[in-house]
Length: 498
Length: 103
Image (cartoon, rainbow over all chains, first blue to last red):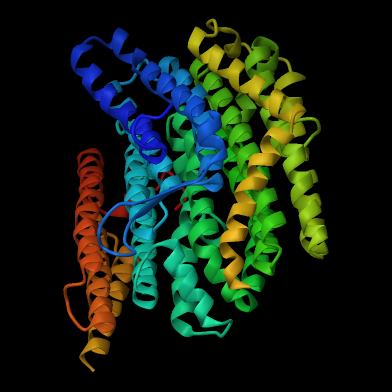
């Protein structure tokens, strides 16, 4: 069934979540009831997933022009956007459930749920935006609410500092992105992806400096959000400082917004200038992978360790992008998108489990958590499941996507990338197993034993994401087929460039 | 020649903005830098519309600039709210006091 038009329906369903939350917040005065606002988002995103998966929407592609100004504003619901909507909404479900218990002590709960709703609305909007203008508006809606959410517990030192750092770096980066968009406007005369592609098709493979300049600005603008090598300085501060459900969303899907923008809007430029950008991508990928893994090894704070592991996984996703920039667009992007999905699941699960740890025992220091697994085997079990998926042990989903990435690198003749991928994968498994050993095989200390029971919604969110991890690990085709559909959609779109 | 002077002016504004945001120690000056950067970007849109179509009133460029002004307002508003919180907590606007995290 459809209400107006599938594209608007998607936006209406996710847009109604913050609106209904706001309206309900007027009627619920006391805090005990305010925390159940999390169910609004939970139900909303279940409806969105069901809507997307129904036959009529899932098998057709839709397009819509919004304004009369030619080439200005266009929305599209195609295989690419449906894949990303699915990734974003699947992680939104356990996050909302988790928030109900995790945030119960906080002030301004209604603001929290409204901001999460706006952030997710911005993310859904990014996926359906088919021109850079609409994309930028949704991008900023997502970014600005994420600044506030990082600094949500502003009465503490760490979130306040992290939010200031995040807003300065990321705010400058979004304006640099807008500067790049302005050059695209100057070059192509319009901002829809079609007009960009027809302009780039006319360039004919020659290097022209404005194109190169715009592409570099895109690389900086999207790169700060996606947090690859020289631009990731804000991430290890901002992600641990946010409340744990928000860390799960930020590490799981918000940094993927940068990856999405890079694939849809910046990749045509990189493909045209692939002689210059291929070595750049190669260097960035190798440095991101290696440096982030080395940094992760040195952390004692468990959330900082996960944040660095997010950067390392962005490095893995960039393996697929390097392969794509080299010219193998569909296999490169398909494996990169599959890793986007499995990393969102794995890192979401890891941060939610750490949220459970923080709720039960108020410490993030790994050395103080030794023996935690013996006290709460369920929470630590989900954490280990998530970490083994991130490390790439079969049969968890992370294994399949890493295998695909390395396979695509070999297929494209990138033996160096494949080698670094394998080495870093092994490296990551080493520090996850080291963490596993400390959590499960040490004796718990005296202060750890004063503990409370696992609250119901938090427990069910962990159960939910644990089941999702196992299910997608046993049926990897459920990930690979939509990822491949998304990648081949983009490849057919970029066909004019070759 | 006037179109290139417009482009250069906006590039200079963007440069000043990035320089201020990355080197200034005072949080207020950092956000003023971000505003200058935003102004430069908006001017770039208008000047490129002028170069492309020979008039200053291309509908797409104008609508983007108006939207962008609103978005910058929100961005700087959130930034100034954080600045106020930093000032209440530490009694200074110098970013050097934010040393708990490794910048």
